Structures are given as structure tokens and as C-alpha cells.
Image (cartoon, rainbow, N blue to C red; front, side, top):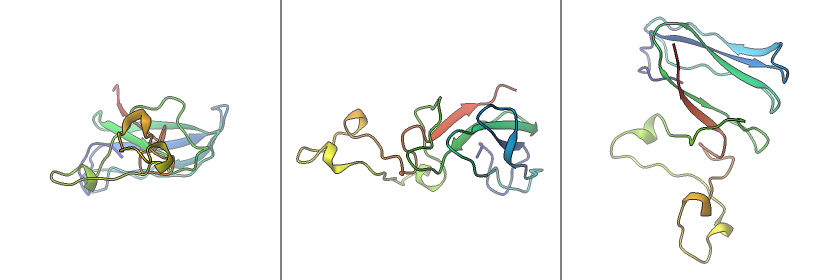
Length: 134
């Protein structure tokens, strides 16, 4: 996803999944965005694959790339992550999952004491939010 309105993206980005060597495209999502589409691309891959986002046309936007994966799927260079969509709206709160064994019987403190589980919406290394350079 990138920072354009739902149903109104005039900036076209494409998503490519490469093999582990980065020499062959194994999957891609190249939906066209010309002003009436969602700012969204999605495809599948494997833990050893490389992910590439290409700006096909339009302005530079902040990108949110997320893995929907098990513990084997993680970005090698993740950012701290972030939320998007409904949980990011004003006056809304979001929840995530953490292992109760990391805090019980003590109070939940968050942060590194209670890391987010890999299967949560923004688990460790599961997302990367970047600003495109051009």
C-alpha cells in the first residue's frame, strides 16, 4: 500500500517477487492505478525470495510493505513498522498479540519486554514503511 486515498490512486506502483538470487521474477502484481483504483498491490512468495517495489508512474509516496507470513517470513531490513487503514483513524485503537509468558504474573509493559508475535498484523520484521526516492 502507499499513501493515496482508497479508490483514488493516481500513482502507479508495481510489486515483484524475485528468487533468492534476485535474477528471476517468480511472481508479480502490476495492477494499473490511474486515479480511480486503490493504492494496493499483492502477491505471494517464499521466505528466501526478494521483494522489489517499482514506481511505474506518478509521484513519490510513502510505501507500506507487509508480509502476511509465518515465523519464517521476515524482511532482512525491516523498519519499526506502523499501522494503516482503520486502526490508524482518529479515536480508534488497535490491538496486537504478545506471549503472556513474557509478562505474567507482572503487568504488561510493552516494548522489548513484550515483543509482538510474528502472526500479529505488524509482527517483528513483518513490515517496512519507506519513502520512495524518486
